[in-house]
Length: 300
Image (cartoon, rainbow, N blue to C red; front, side, top):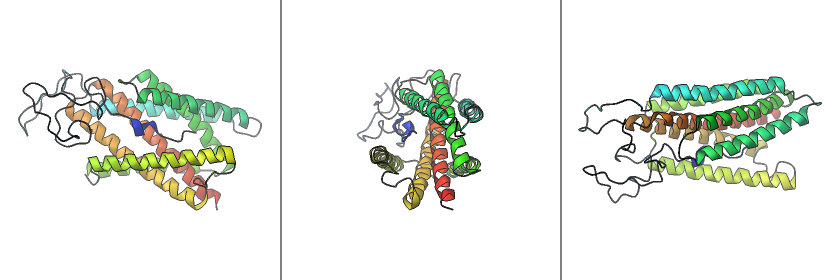
C-alpha cells in the first residue's frame, strides 16, 4: 500500500521545457524584468509573475492590462483537462471493478489476490514516481499507472468490504466525490485562495504526515501489530481526518495549477499532467476515507 502521494513532489506544468516552480524564467527582451523577489519565478503560486508559458508559440499574447488576450490553437483548455481526467479516472474505475470481480478474496484465494494487489500497487507507485520526475507528460505512462492502481484498489476495496464492513466502499466513494465537489465550489467562490503561504503550509504538513506514516509502517513491519497505532483507534481516526483534509488542500493546489495553465496558455499535452495530479489526489482521498470508515465501523 502506498504511503505517500507523488503529487507532493509534482513540479507542475512545464516551463521553458522544465518545471514550473523550479526553473527560473529569464526575462524576455522588451518584457517585464524579474525583480528581487525570490518567489517571482520560483513559486508557481506567486502573484504577478510574467507568463510562464511565454515560449509556447500558441500561448495568449501579452496585451494591455484588462484587455482580452488573443488565444490561438494548441493550448490547454478546460475541455482538455476534463476529457483527460475522465479517461484516467475511468481507467482506474474499470480496472478496479474487473479486479474486484476476477480476483476473489475468499479464504481459498485471498493470498493470491493480495499478492497480485501488492505487486500492482508497487508497479503503480514506480510508474507514478517516474511520471512525477519526467519533464513532459506521457499519456501511456499515466494510463498504465491508472490501470495498475485500479487493480490495487479493486482488491483492497473488495477485501475491506468482505471482511471489515460491508458497504464501506460506496461510502468512501461518496465521501471522495463530496470532498471534490466541496473544494471545487469553495475554490470557484474564492473561499479558498492558493497563495505562497498556503502552498508552503500544505507541503510542510504533507511531508510531516508522510514521515509519520512511514515510521508507523516500519514499526508495524519490524515490531508487529499496528506499529505506533497511527492507523487504529482514536489516533487512527484523527490521522484519517488529517489525511482527508490534506487531500482536500491538494485538490485546491491542483485546481490552481489547472487555472494557471489555462490562463497562461500551457500546451495542450499538459492536460495529461492535470489529469495525473487530480487522479493521484482523488485516490489519496479515497484511501483515507476507506481507512477512516473501516476504523469507525470496525469499532462498532
